[in-house]
Length: 190
Image (cartoon, rainbow, N blue to C red; front, side):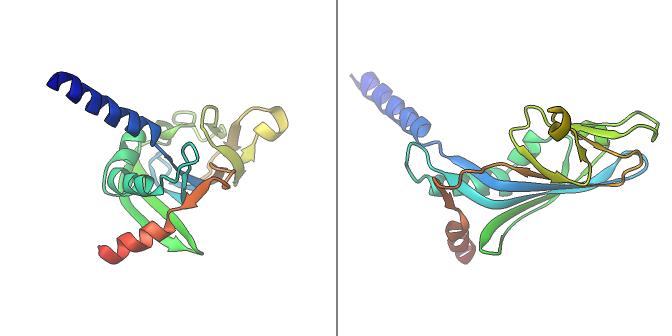
C-alpha cells in the first residue's frame, strides 16, 4: 500500500511538472560578432523583452523567471546549448521598460558557431544557414537570400569583420507575461 501511495505521489508530481512547464521566451534577439583575420573572435547575444508564454492559459512566469536565473544566468544552460562559445559575461537588466539579457563570449573559429567560411581563403562570402533555427529573420548587415530565393541563408562579403543579425523569436505577445516585475523583486532581495 505504501508503494502505491508513493507511486501516486510521484506520478502526480511528474504530471504537474509536465502540465506547468511554461515557456521562457524573448521577443527578439540581436547577434553581434567581431571576426579576427584568423577566424577567432568575440560576440554577444542580446535577448530583448524576456517573457513567459502562458501554458494552457496558466501564468507560469514565476517558474520561468526561476529557470532564467538558475539555469541561464547563474547556470550553464546557454553554454551547454552553445558549446562553440566561451562565455565571458552575462547580465540581466531593465531597458526601456523591458527585461533584457546579454551574453558575451569568444569563439575559436567562426565555423565552429554555425558559419561557413572557406578555410584559409578570404575569397568567398561568409555564409550562415538559418534552417531549423526556430527564429525568423528580421534584419542584418548581410544579404538575406531567403527573401529572394526562399532559402534561409545570409551571406556577407569576403573579409567581413563585423556581423549583425536580428531575429524575431516570439511574435504573439498576447498570452505572455513580462518577467520585469519578477526581476525587480529579485534584484531588491539580492
